[in-house]
Length: 112
Image (tube, rainbow, N blue to C red; front, side, top):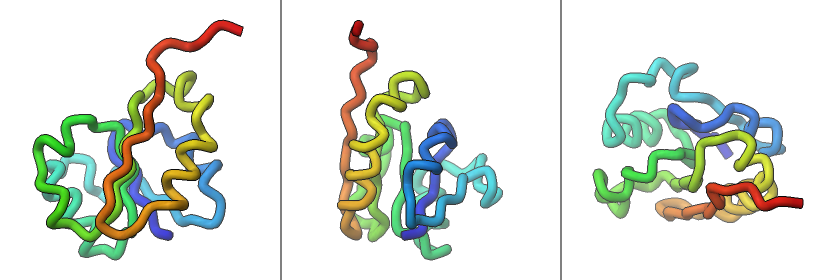
């Protein structure tokens, strides 16, 4: 699967998505694209999935008109995301074309 990381998606996740090709919006030269432009560019370039931390995306775009899968993370902080890497990988691996999946990531680290 060809995966695009949106701005703000921690690059460390890349190492936990075995068997996939990951590129960043920055690597693609798409850092300044708006959400709609980014989704269209990603689809046109053959990306299968967008991994994003932009929680406004579903409110700004009609996601049903896109074929690309979208997995949205509920946090941006690496220390929080690290605890959910398997859950993120499962969401990516289970994504189907045109689907939107939200991965809940608690904002507070549990003690222990």
